[in-house]
Length: 89
Image: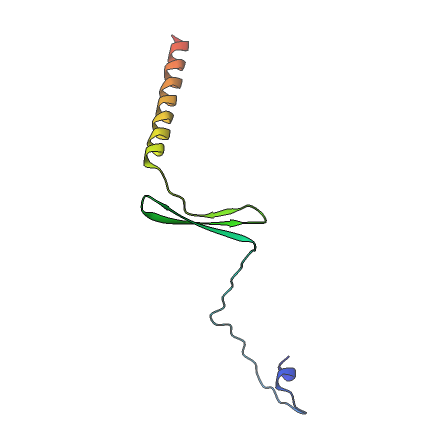
């Protein structure tokens, strides 16, 4: 490969040194849909692969819904404990 790149009739290649510096790779799958949503004053970007349907990106978390889910989980655990204790006694 070195001889072919240099060309000419005669060559004397005494050594070779191969280095790859700052190698970068960018991969784009098309079609891709980009959606930017503003929620509570903050922008959130979402990318969707149009072929596979895979969705990537950050999403906003609703503090009220999180508190509701945690409260429901705690109530469920309490109900299970009360039910187990009632069945024993």
